[in-house]
Amino acid sequence: FVSATPSQGTYDATTGLWTVGSLAPGATVTLQVTATVVTGGPKTNTAQVSAVDQFDVDSTPNNNVPAEDDQDAALVQPPRTLSKRAFLAR
Image 1: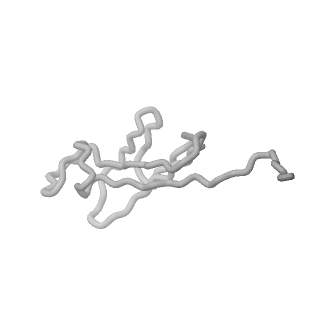
Image 2 (image 1 turned 90 degrees about the vertical axis):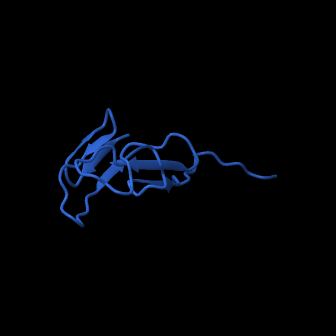
Image 3 (image 1 turned 180 degrees about the vertical axis):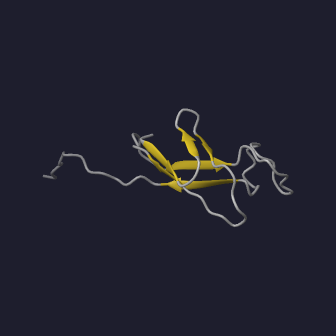
């Protein structure tokens, strides 16, 4: 983890919780996270609504059920980098 910039609310880097606050219907907010990847291969980044102040008929916050509409994941493939080594075939 390097940094996080929310378009609204606050982000706690220690807990990983983004407190958004109130949203108007149809509103969009974003959280831009910058990280340094130290191991190869794809990484999955998951986000989930952990608490709400109103009833949601089709999901339960913070229950880790990916099929509900309060949780989503994105697969990130870090770019490959070249080292400063060269291997020449004879």
